[in-house]
Length: 293
Picture 1 (spheres, rainbow, N blue to C red):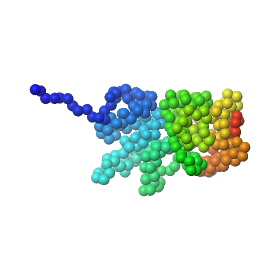
Picture 2: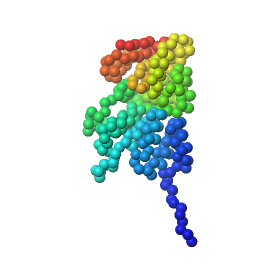
Picture 3: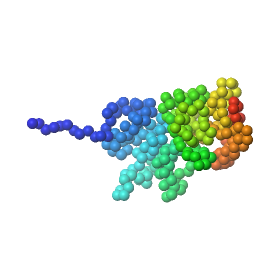
Picture 4: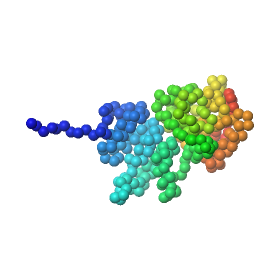
């Protein structure tokens, strides 16, 4: 009787082909396919998943992929108590790793935020809060006792369910969107941005932001209707680095003082009192008001 030449198959290996998973994950932003690829690479040497993670992050703005890119960049250490370490990286690799870790944190990925907080305890200069992170702190503080949550959508198919996104912006130039605020379970079904919640649009297209501002300040009736869909109670629109932020605030009646208060907080805490361009939207079907100081 001959020997059994059948090799055992690792439980980490997917039922679908690598090529199929790559196309689904990297071309279409399919998160399930991405997770299958990541699990399969547990059977490979550390660092083998780097290119997949980085491409998923760069193309689809997926928070987990930014964090995975950071992990894949870490190097082995001789310390028996630590397998991988940022300290083992050269300066260029270290800088890239921190950049992707920061981006994961900005997108609300808690493990990345926790890791940055740990770094700050050892070396406070390693992480300077980005404009987006500083703004998110304002959102958190204004929700007071309410739970603040994050929901990131990176599949184009998800965008079609958000009426005000499709009717106002060129979704082909959008990488991903994020709801940051309260009651996010049904955000994709909501007609407008709830008060106290920010809607953050991420785009790597350089023209997107200027085109969007031009569009938002158009005074035709179609745009006025779109603005009411987004901001029936009012709000603020501004840009940070590679994000367009739409923040819903109650501007009805005396509520406009609250808009001015939050505008002052953004001016002082996010832009360090320097000049920045933003739009204010009043209550109801109102046009956007440009503010530059």
